[in-house]
Amino acid sequence: MGSRGGIRPQYGAMLTSDQSVETGFIAGDTVMSQDLKTAIVELDRDAVPALVTQRLEAGDDPLEILGDCRAGMTLVGERFEEGEYFLAELLISAELFKEAVALLDPHLEEAGSRETAGVVVLATMRGDIHDLGKNIFATLLRAHAFEVHDLGVNVEPTHLVDEVQELKPDFVGFSSLITTAFDSTRQAIEMLEDKGLRAGVKIMLGGGVTTPGLAKHLRADFQTSDASTGVTYCLEEAAAAGT
Ligand code: B12
Image (cartoon, rainbow, N blue to C red):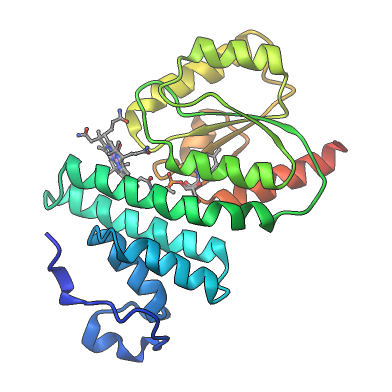
């Protein structure tokens, strides 16, 4: 573990992608951006918080920093898929990611200023315990004055439906990172339809494994793998509804 590519990050340097031939950097990436991805995929517990802090101090957009952290997590997932990393590495990467988000959170909260509000219920459904992305989406929504009810992970469809009945939200967001949760998501949506709760609610699918095709299949209104795009959708829908 930890030797692939042989890149030892040069923290703080703002080199351009011209150096990519030698180092393996991706065209368009700055060294700072590539460093953070590398630090995450190499599970470097000192470098990750140091780089996030350094980039915040340098005035980088917190959403861009977050995007680089997420890209690092995608690389971790690829190594897991290839059998190079195991569950232990996934867990360590999750801890590193949480640490990065804890540093970014106050800046993400500052990012929003619009007063448009609506009620959002969020859940990761039964069969899925991934929640890092959902938590980020919740933070960004709150930053834009949405009232967020986060039901957590491994949520039973009946529990979600009870909460929707009680809270009468404008939006229900399902966060999915693993295909085994598709069935419970489908069940929840069908139960909302059967109980007559579907009409007043916009249903969103988000998370790495969701696709437009899945959204169509589940009769969801919206799908994305990007929290900011999700917030834009909520803001536009809330404005259109006059909330
Ligand atoms: C970290 C991680 C874990 C951690 C999760 C910790 C946690 N608290 O979440 C731990 C170690 C617990 C874990 C466990 C497992 N994992 Co895992 N894990 C990952 C990993 C590396 C990163 C996921 C992540 O957090 N990404 C970063 C976040 C920020 O991205 P995101 O979730 O997509 O969120 C963004 C957007 O999608 C959006 N968003 C998210 N939700 C929502 C919702 C709405 C409504 C909206 C609008 C937007 C939105 O906002 C975020 C910011 O933009 C992925 C690899 C990958 N490629 O994703 C594998 C991965 C998801 N895991 C996988 C697997 C197989 C597992 C395990 C089954 C492993 C095992 N053998 O036990 C278990 C699953 C247990 C279960 N039942 O859920 C597979 C899933 C394969 C599949 N296609 O189904 C992946 C893809 C790895 C792989 N390539 O094989 N995992």
